[in-house]
Image 1 (cartoon, rainbow, N blue to C red):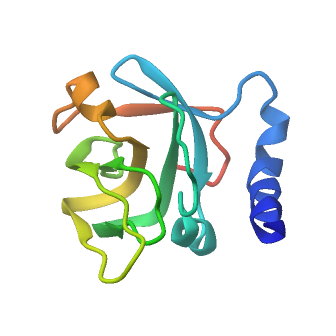
Image 2: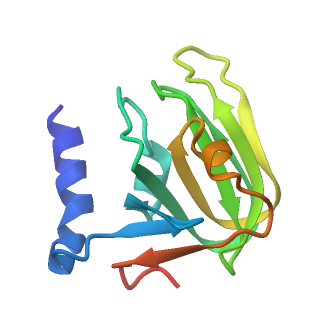
Image 3: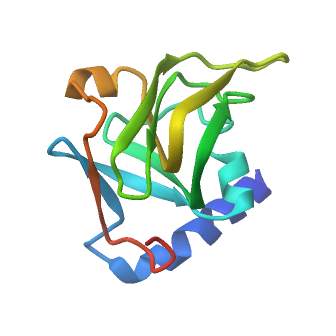
Length: 147
């Protein structure tokens, strides 16, 4: 519990300076308050152990390059939509309504193209937005490490 609280504080500190302009991603005209996973440790932990994800919240995983990406749901307790975007922030692949997994073996959910960004949202969100390949997202209040 203490480690999780420290991780949350460490992730949240860089964004305190944004104040009212808290980090968010806008996709298809809908804005999601967003946590950023920009290093190996935060990308590895992701949304593990969370029991709830608000419908207007998500996590954006940022990688240093464009490559095929694979995610799994080990210790993830909530179903998710996993959206893969290239370096131009264009949607290249989607894994929708991905179920939680608490015991091995857990399935792997790959992108079908190269991705630099991966956005996780509550399951069903992508269908509700009628997302399709080529759609783009924007970031507000983005930390300087995101290009």
